Length: 428
Image (cartoon, rainbow, N blue to C red; front, side):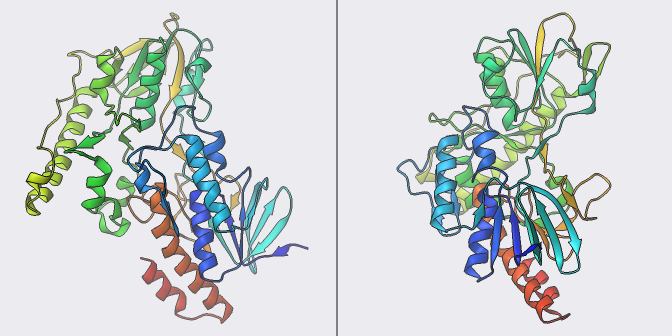
């Protein structure tokens, strides 16, 4: 007979644990199901030298704040695991580790959650297994010649994983830039395929860029305050890197060390990678948007009469692009020995047997309230706020959704009422 538990939370990363803390605060019995150990993705699916993109002072979860002696630094993977693992112990989260969810389906009482160890009957389920479950690899990857080895960020650990010789890195957001820099510095020539991207300095006017973004309220912008939330959820991650030196890493920094820039990868045909001719336009647009952000910061400083308290305003050189970037690269001549697909991720809901997906396979939700009663999602890009996918974004989102979930449990316990619709309104 299936075990009855009111709520199952899938995933014991920072989002699942934030939800656990919020449910405990509301007196809601629940379990957290984790296929590996707490913070499993941080432990097993990140490359060796990766650090958080957000400064340590932004690392916070419900009831816990960063308490170290380097608030302006950036956590290493080991430090992130320690932060999240310590949080799980501090809140006494009811985590069942080494428990893989194999199927979730609707039943009369709510949901049946099958795992490789047991089955649970739950009235509500929170999907907190993260936005980066499956790498997004373009269909043209099937046309890569056999002699060229391919990698995703989940497989890559360090440059020594790659064969000797040149590498093509596809994607120029945070991951692509960092890997292109690391691989090139290992002595391997790197070609970087650049599409739409968000250029951003690590520091501006004496403070981390996230300090200014938080001060301006940009990170708290809500999903129902933007004109096109689908577009907003697909904006590339900013070109940032977290280093002890607070280094700015942009395309100019990469070309300065010898990385070759090409346009967005369009296709692979007859052993050749073919690129679009829009590289200059994409770089110009990124430069323009960077200028707008810096102007917004400058205007806020002026309005608060703080000009004398911060460093002077500055502008960064425009992105330098060759007059005629290459439109193709031969993958058969031995110059390129590996391709790294830094082309994004999607959540893994392969075990979710509930009809809540759109025609593109994306889960349908309204700020994390999924299109099925009692089903919730957490940790997705711009779920409820622009900060939703960051560690510090989990707290507000989890509180909102825990309120909605509590109202849902109460309304279904007492029968149909207007409670759920009122809670949905509050969660918005």
